[in-house]
Image (cartoon, rainbow, N blue to C red):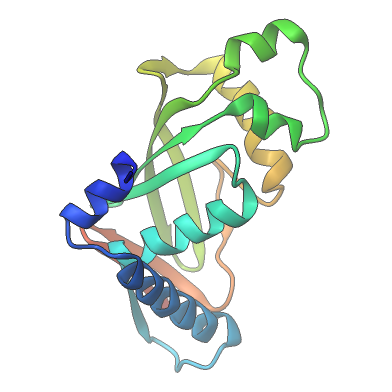
Length: 186
């Protein structure tokens, strides 16, 4: 029996072979950028399908039992990410255990949506969270800070939200557009 996500992918014409091909294409482009093999002012396009295949592969390797069906949708300087996340399982992989009450509040798989604005130029980028939704409820303020500190930062200590950070590998800027991201090198 096919899962709902597998049925959706097949109905859209996106097969496992396409996903593998898209992942390999994204990985090849990222490898070229990271290795510094491209000339100055090169533009590398990562399509939305390539990015989604890459994100899916990363999710399977980082959190196979706690994060499912990640999906990116891109707009002008914006990205929306959705996934099904079991925060209690994700937290078990971290360093700081949660108390029993908090575990009860967040256990079970929850639909999550994150809307972010992405600005970059001159080798510097800023990612601003515009909206975070868990099970249809908007999360902001101290609750959002708790989620970032408890779940994002322990897994990605280099992650920077709302503050400028340097882009690596000679990247000058990221042009986020519907359908993909253009990586412009210095």
